[in-house]
Length: 158
Image: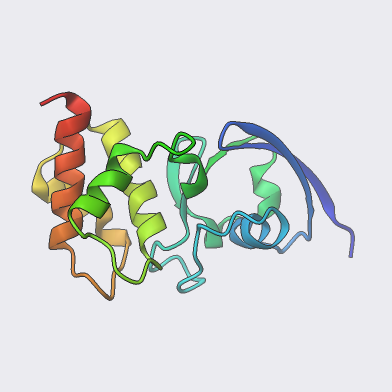
């Protein structure tokens, strides 16, 4: 089977890769590009562990084909920190102990970042609604929601 040549931007860097036509973007990220932060939790788009942004839109990378990344802008958890400096959301997740096993955490962080880019001052209800597509089996959601609200306040300078 012929592989497709894809040119894209991932976390601000121009990237090229070859992929099979049926290969998901999640598999390309993990297996071809060694960006293993996005996790496969369900492979059906139900858990959010593989959440990324594609041209600024929050998507489950297990539901996107690698070839669909052609000419697009992909943002993953690996692009969230600035070198050694954590993104405020990442720091607040640590401060609030909003993570345990870590399987859901990258997807939740990417989703929360996407929310705060669209709405820098969300209510608790809006945070819970926005993160409803991200399943966590360890922490429950209260610490996650508190961390997102705290990060939002910090990012606004409140």
